[in-house]
Structure formats: C-alpha cells, structure tokens
Amino acid sequence: MRTGEEAAAYAQELRRIVRFLGVSSGNMQEGSLRCDVNVSVRRKGAQELGTKVEVKNLNSFSAVRSAVDFEFRRQTSLLEAGRGSEIKQETRLWDEQKMETKSMRSKEEAADYRYFREPDLPFLALRPGFADQVKAEMPKLPREARDDLLGLGLSVADASILSDDLGLFEYYTECVSSGAEPKQARNWLVGDISALLKEMKRDLDACAMRPQQLAEMCQLIDGGTISGKIAKGLLPELLEKGGSPKELVESKGLVQISDEGELDKIVAEIVESNPKQVEQYRGGKDKLFGFFVGQTMKATKGRANPKMVNDCLRRALDQ
Image (tube, rainbow, N blue to C red):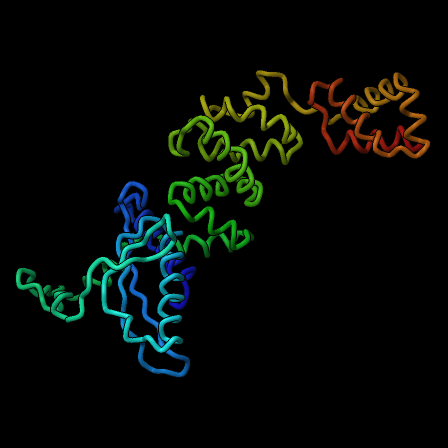
C-alpha cells in the first residue's frame, strides 16, 4: 500500500469480511475493531524501505487515512532535510485534535518487538484435505457479492454500498430474486427505506417489510397499479406492520387511475375551469403546465398515472 486512502480502503474491506463471516460487528466506535499501521518511506529508486514507524490504536477509517498521510509527510520532510537519522523505530499515537502523530515509546531493538516463537503455542498439523474442505464451506465474501451486484447492471458505487453489510446484501438479492427490477430495488432500499428506518431508529432486519413485499411493491409500480408517490405514502405502514402492498393498496382505494378515457374527462373539466391559465399557457407561459398537472393530481387525490396525465394534458392544451 502506498497511501492513506489505500490503507483505509483495506481496513474497510477487512471489516466487511468479518461482518460477512459473522465473527464481529466490526464497529470501530464500540472497540470491536482497532487498527495499527506501520509506515516507512524510501527515496525514489531505492530498493529498501526506511525505518518502520508504528502508529497504534486508530479507531476510525478517517484516522487510518490521516495518520498514514501525516507520517508519510513527516518522514519525507525529515529525509529531504537530511535528518533521516531522526526517524526512529518507535510506536506513535494519533492526536485527532492536532491531526498529527506523537511519540509514545521507542523500540529500537528487535527484542522489544518480541520477535520470537510463542512457546505455549504448539505447531498445528492439518489433516489432508482440511483446507479444501474449509474453502468449499466458506460463505460468500464481499468481493464475490460485489461481482454479483455488478452482474445485475449496478454501478461500482452502488455495488459497494449494497455489499457493505451482509444483511443489506441478502435483503437486496432476495428482493431482486422475487421479481424486483435491480436498480429500482436499489433506489428504494438506499433511498426512502434507509431514511425512514433512520427516523424510526430501526435496523433493516428489524423492520416488518420483507424482501418479497418490497418486490411486490416495485411490481405494482412497474405495472401501473400505483405511482411512486403512492408507494412512498405506503412505506411507513409497510415498514411498521408488513403485509401485502397489493392488499394494502386495494383496502385504501389507492389503485392508480390509468384509464385514458377517465383521465381525458377529468383533464377536460380542469381546462374548462381555468380559461385564464389556458390562455396564458397557449400564449407562451409553458411553466403553467405544472399548474395543470397539480390540479389534475389534486382532483384524483394523487391517484392519476403521472405519465398519462402529462399525455392527456398535452393533447388538451396544445390543440
């Protein structure tokens, strides 16, 4: 690794792995994960790295990034000033307030680092085939999860977000397997659902809405049964109580109006009721189109198919 950014990315991937394996939460703020970094520099063209400096107990990825970058600048400036001998083999701590490392203790001899075999740990002999057996039983790891997500047509950024947590990845993939369009499922999960759960102070695995129900809601939108706006209005109840989105839509009478004849009739009434705005629109005030859309949605209590509303209004206003 050559930069603080690379070191932080490595630590983040390590956290994803322990989370996918279920061996740790990896929450740095809780102390479940801590990082030490070793930093050494060399002049351009040199084969050997310089003196190693250890920075201990970094408790955030930003601290990892900043500590490595600071140490690189500190050691480089000493070398360029001809003071390379001042770079000691030592342990340093990161000062978050001053954004710098400071010396904790010197370890100039290898013995200080306890470079010898632990006598209480015996040699471990693995039976033949054990390693292959473990490899075959390994669960899917983050890199494989990202590859799967990229195969669904998601961007690298989206794949990284959805594979950052095993629960989120499993929820998403089950939702897509149940029939949701991949990008639409991503938008709901990372957008509105994530925001609502944050307000509710709940985790995804504690919400009542299951992946199959999110897929059902996506299919209702795709099929024109409801609009995205109606779906957003249903989300809080679905997250709280679960259940079938289709049954909820029907029980509340929220089925989207997609009958062209019915919409044409509603639009005609709105156009007839607003002659002044019609004249202004036809006179060049195109922004008034939004006024007519709003009136139509108000008249249908938000149930009108948005695309069909636009089409019906264009026909009525542009004639």
